[in-house]
Amino acid sequence: MSEQVRRYIIFALGLMFMGFGVACLIKSSLGVSPISSLPYTFALILPVLTVGQWTAGINLLMLFMQIAIKPDVNKLSLVVQFLMTICFGCFIDMSLNFMVDYHPEKISYLLQLATLVFGCFLMAFGTYFDIISQKGVLPMDSFLQLFAQKINKQYTNIRIVSDLIMTAMSITLCLVFLGEIKAVREGTVIAALLCGSMIKFCMLRMKSLTYTLLPENLVALEPEAKSELVNDHNFVLTVSHEYGSGGRTIAKRIAHELDLPYYDTEIIKLAASKGGYTPEYLQRHEEKIDNNALYTLYDLYAASIPQGNVPMAEQIFNLEAQVIREIAANESCVIVGRLANYVLQNHRNALHVFITADEEERVQRVMRKDSITYEESLAKIRAFANDRKNHCLQFSEKEWGNGVNYDITIKSNRYGVDRTAAILIQLIKEFRLLQF
Image (tube, rainbow, N blue to C red; front, side, top):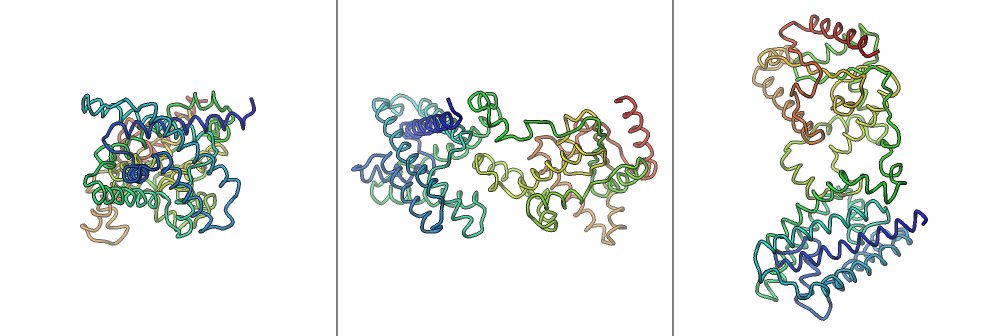
């Protein structure tokens, strides 16, 4: 069987699972997902059309909206979207007909919840199939992507606003025409958050299934899985440090003494060139996750978005990680920050160092270096620490500064900058002798 035939079969199966998932959410009577709330509401108000037909109708409207905002949109893409819309609507109605005698609300609330969760899993599994098939997205998502590009906004933000608008419209229509809210309930919130995390689980934990069904994806989806970029014969020192600990100065001295290339802000320049950004833009946005709880909430909600539309912090991290791997593949070096210790965690000839210092010592150092007051220095140190903590937790799921994540943790104010550099140089020399 050819690769393209397999992709279309997997794509169709994904639509079938998604349709069955939507049906399970409806039968749970706890509310449907935001994107399904409007067609379900229309089906309740005007049952002349089924839920599947209303779903197809709204998506077909989005098909024409794409042409309106971008007349030169790819016509083959529109044909594929048209066919998948019809199939998706049919799968929803077939599933509802199959479950016509299933009424969990008459049995127990627990069974309703179980039905809802099962529906979320089916939707996530179906979405996972559609993602790995690489055969397109439903017209609603495609329209929102084009619209986001048109107004120069992040797709994810547009998607969230769109879901909120559809949910609000559904609530309003239900109250006006039915006198009660049926399409939106606690299950709507659960589905919005649970589906994203389930999609992410499928993408991360079902890679063996992905490569069994589509071995071509070993190259197409994950180029880094095709061949390990890092050359283990290259020695790499990664230096993580607290702001004000003198970590950069120590790293530069080590690089100079050992005659190794030094990479710090150079990584920003290389990542900017690779991603088509200016270095100044990347420097403003890197390691900027102001509220890790909100980012995690967002991450759960929008887990399966196109790579170009992921949050800026994630785009920058991916670009920098790619640059770090390429550097480590080409030469021995010293790399400062940017979670290089995590990116190169499986590189057996890498040594990971964390440099810390007492807060009072760091405050005094920043005061001298930046010519600022004690209060300003303390605020700056704590702001940097918060950014790095959130950034590390989000992308590595590890605690920044925790000694178990590094080979060596050293307090620079105990020995001074020069002595700390000397101690680390000696340890590095011994490490390299042991390795090779």
